[in-house]
Image (tube, rainbow, N blue to C red; front, side):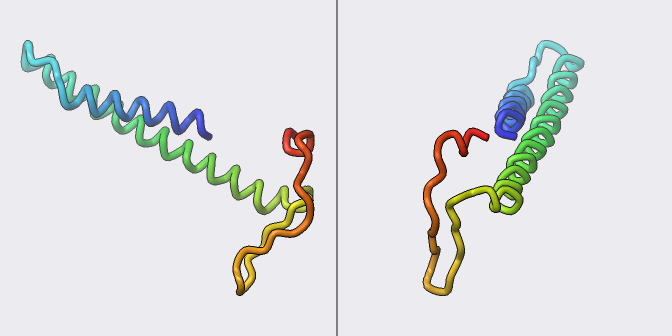
Length: 95
């Protein structure tokens, strides 16, 4: 998810730069450059959004599904955040 978001951000930035500084040697080149910039901006935005959704899904999975395997328990209480249990080992984190 993080790699997809980074790639989408790069393509989005390149698309915006291509759209802002088009080749002005001919009208056709100008139009092609604007079209390429718009396409790259759209593709970058969609890729960035997909990467963000994948990251969010991973976080939700880690919090909800993997919760039973963790030794550390976080819960929200009326007085604030409660932490109980023990910290997981490095090998447990790497699974």
